[in-house]
Amino acid sequence: MDWQSESPELWAFLESLHRGDILSGTVAAIERFGVFVALDDGPAHPTLPGVGFISIPELSWGHIDAPTDVVRVGQRVSCAFLQFDTYNAEARLSLKALEPDPLQAFADRTAVGQELRGMVENTVSIGAFVDLGDGIVGLLPFREAHGRPAVSLMEDFEAGEEIAVVVTEIELPTRRVLLSGPQGGRHEGVAPAT
Image (cartoon, rainbow, N blue to C red; front, side, top):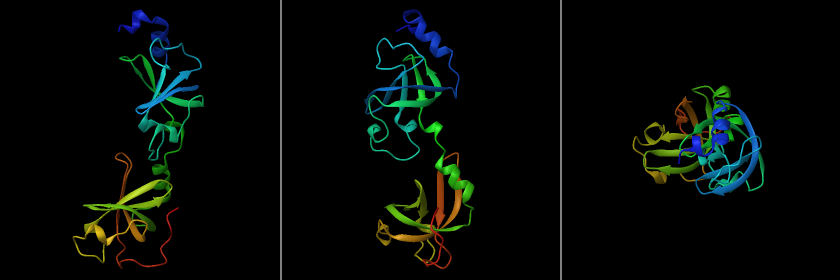
């Protein structure tokens, strides 16, 4: 569809938006792929439930199982404008852009080399994912788990087990936290993650 000629008011509205603009509206529909928002200041969309759209990754910094974990139909929301989707003639929005980034907060308060305590969330063939609190999960590669064999089996770590870890890397662009075991193996007295 040629949105520019079919819906000039909608096109002009979307073209007037700039990245970072804060828009308000009401959640009009929730789908498995995202959330439609009827914007307060914009025209109605001729074919979609709302002119605004929030994709699943833009709903929250943390892991969610479904969009309904974050929003419900009829809820008022404020979102940051990301871009004009010219194919669908919609405003791509972000809820999480208006919330502090928990990984940045973790990086601000945590130094590389700092020892923390965390809870084993799960294991995969290369290592254990360790919950450090506040939605931050780091990877402890088996080759970095001091006091254990160089190639450790997944069964060596139990989900829910509290372990000591050392932060070896915080990669903000790739959103990764890498860990190693403390030099002396597991021990008590390490500060819990904050």
